[in-house]
Length: 449
Ligand code: FES
Ligand SMILES: [Fe+2]
Image 1 (cartoon, rainbow, N blue to C red):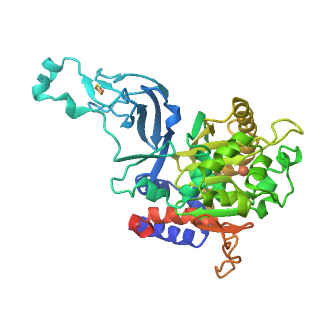
Image 2 (cartoon, rainbow, N blue to C red):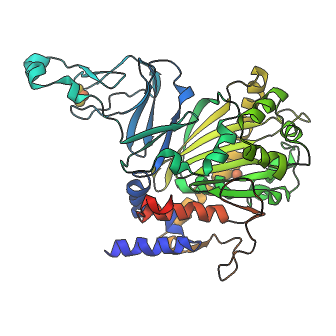
Image 3 (cartoon, rainbow, N blue to C red):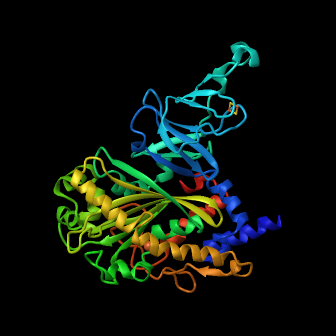
């Protein structure tokens, strides 16, 4: 009860934009997240392009729950619990591969890549054969809900979760800019994986709205001219948007047509043409009329996106890249980062090559942005664990008056769903943690949809 009261108070503070540092370090908070956030939300596992051929699989987790994401022998994408139905051994211990069957290392039960149990050593002697032990009843289990959008495969461990489409809600409008630049969509490469001693929410919050850190944390990147345009005030001309369960940042583009603006960030004509054909009039209007282009974003709880366009060669033109990234919680104070390079499958080969280079210069294990960011996040997590410091309420109220009024109104005539604000403000970090609060308190889905 006492514990429950403590979490309730913490959530109430978060809703006001006063974030008790314990949010980033506390074990009880983490356990509640495993239960209420990762146990109920739709969580990203893999992209269909990672498993193009029958038998291709990757092993992924939702916190501690391990799943095999496999394209079965009939070409159907399945998510199978990586837990042997006999004594619970992990059936597949490789991270990725191609297999027609998975054989359990403990006693040798064998499952087809459809999940069906097809082999049980000494079936007759040990179990009394099919009569006493029908193998059909002991296939690998699937999580309660599996669905995909633009090739992104999600699961929910909550049988009563809303449909994925409804969960994504208005964020789908923005998601398409990253994941559907042509009718064919993305191919992803990677992931690079590494661990950071930082709470998983810090990256998620940063990617969804922290335009304020760019001029300072990433100052050196501007200084060396990795970006074509590096005025320190550039980011405050951008808009941050948030719709239902996700939000992100944008850059303001120089005046021009849809084509000119996309060319200005480095897209070749044939890609621009496909975007024009693939995106809806409302989506095209974001670039063509409002003059914005998406940059980093986060979909609750832990999937983030990057879209940026550094110069890959000194003095050369900008080259855009897309990255997907998962903040996979290990514990309250540790996160495994998965970072994929993503590119439209129909993009010219030369573009793919340059775009990959552009991604690697900026993000991933060797990326300059990555290195700048992570030191801040590990440091926040370390001091947030202090017995006394954990109670400090951090100020996440940028864009609000002392009384909590909005200092600036949402933008008029924004072509996309949700709310958009121009200029610096922690609107999105608050919105993301608002969703987090709803989940932590187990608010009913229907209330939000
Ligand atoms: S635990 Fe898998 S066969 Fe026994
Ligand atoms: Fe950053």
